[in-house]
Length: 345
Ligand code: EPU
Image (cartoon, rainbow, N blue to C red; front, top):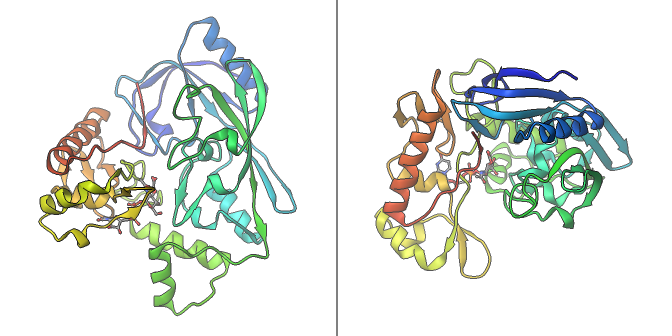
């Protein structure tokens, strides 16, 4: 294992943005992870754990500590239980689960990134979230210097959140392996409106897992949410903002600000007296329409929620667009938007 210095991080991110890491190391085994943690501790360096780089925005100055790139490999299957090392490509795992008739993650097709990132931000799309299939997460506990197998409840999952990315234990655990409890001989999941429309239009009544995977890939492709090599809008981190959960009492004000009847404000139920709003809708009604551009940073032409690097954008330019959007949406609707990608500085 080689500790390298001044390694540019841009090539490791889907935004293709970011300055250098002061130190950089790649872990292919669990003992590599332990050695990296010790190296950082001895030199009093901050540690950043990098997976597929699909949900990070690295600052132009880079990271003045140790970047630990997770490259552990290996997939094991026992009946409907799939266990994958953190460095495995997520979509390859979904593809193989669908091919072997295992249900539970088919709607999570086409999501860039690695297995290790899925429990961290509780990856979800088209009606599925990994929190519903994750059985255990194996991780190195930096606080006790021990390996632990955390069960589903111990992961503290909620929408785009977990014990790994929020609260007192944030950054405490380094994930090495995730075990998913999938299901055999069950119908594919079709609950999300976009998917239902897709199959209705195609005249397909009971799609199989492979058909659901293909439908999700096609919908995501249309929204620019699949990393496509050479596409001019490939440089992004997917959804840039989380869909905000607000008090239902705010709806009249939001409708008035959007100059629409209240019934036309899209919303999803989110617990007592609260609703989840599509951030993409808020952006569009605040003037940030598809293709809106500020320098080399732009709102994707295919999905309002994806900010893109149009080529040569700096992290500062993406951050400036983020700030412009957050300020305007707060002023107009009284809604605070929270970025989804992790800011690395
Ligand atoms: N909408 C617009 N304009 C757009 C796109 C969407 O106004 O350009 C509005 C519409 O009202 C639409 C609603 O937003 O009905 C929902 O849109 P969509 O189904 O595309 O989902 P999303 O809320 O924008 C979320 C996730 C995605 C995930 C999709 C599908 C978040 C922050 N994003 O997006 O996840 O793929 O649902 O389930 O929850 C990601 O997290 O990086 C990500 C891509």
